[in-house]
Image 1 (cartoon, rainbow, N blue to C red):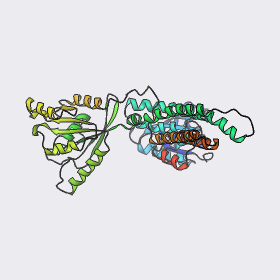
Image 2 (cartoon, rainbow, N blue to C red):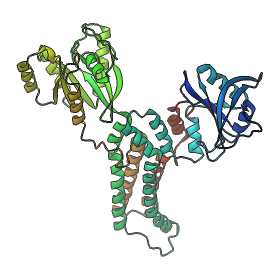
Image 3 (cartoon, rainbow, N blue to C red):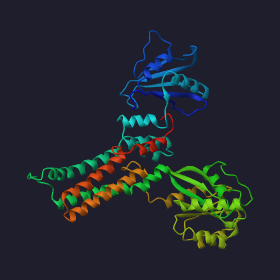
Image 4 (cartoon, helix red, strand yellow):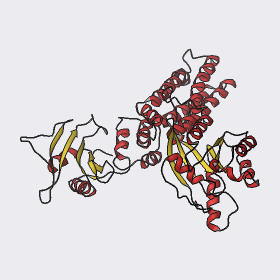
Length: 459
């Protein structure tokens, strides 16, 4: 469907900067470039995979829009495996829009979200899991998440999926031959050996599924929710962790009505820090909505930082809040230690000895590094070694692997019950289908549209 279609888009963030890029892909790319580009050197021809210096002109009146560097990548050695042109101009909204308008006028159409990468997938340059890794690279917030995304882009997960598929095909082939040619005396693998080899495949698939939780944390970050009663210093703590004044801080209880979400990195591990409204009996409708939002975020949290005001001691409201966190990983931050005696602080720590407890002063930045250490220690059961193995980071991949595992389990049941080989073959064929969904070999157009809609236009 792309054979006669040429697309174009701004490939860099719109705004003032040193360089902006217009990307064109499709059969008309070279002709469009030749019409709108005027070289500083004569005679001239656009050579593939070289940078050329010149000007982009408005074909309506032959006026110069900008000085540019232009490159042409002849298919199939390009990002999309189509003819691709990239125009490097000065970055400014007017310049980029004017050049794009000229390109569209000369025969291209505006690209949809993710369409360049979608073409790369459909044209066979990358598979679907590698295409998804592109957006993961763009969204990476730590070195660890970037490393995993690059591994996937280079095909680490794809290779493991193909290894599993080849192993299943090896087991399935003699079974299907025996079904197609029942009159032939064909030696097929024994049921005992088949079960043994499927068990080995199941172990590999389970290991991939088990990597999902850690992989998801690398990809998305651990959700860390700051909770506590009003005016205990939650927003001050957020600002201290971020090292900037992100949240409004006042002495008035209930200042935070909504939630604030920001990303930080602790020892290379991504965390999504969420500051919430104080949890207590609401005095009005706005506070009631704030408390409701806080509890919603709390229910989804991977880790909770409970902030207590050490200068006020513990009361029933604090104990009620602690009781709501029994199924959560919790670190307690005893705030405002600049206002409390050492003996009172010791009593508080003794009363809370079931939890990691860190005395802090968010106002004076005391204990913030110790709090970060406590957060890291609480989640340290993860390996934090992004280079050691293949990770599953995508929910779609995890679901496909679970379906693969279930299909192989059903195949094993058929083997145990000594069912006809057709039943075994059917379940093993289904397992191949589900594995194929990961790399895009058996994926519907609706799923493809959803995946690529998450990309920015120009990628």
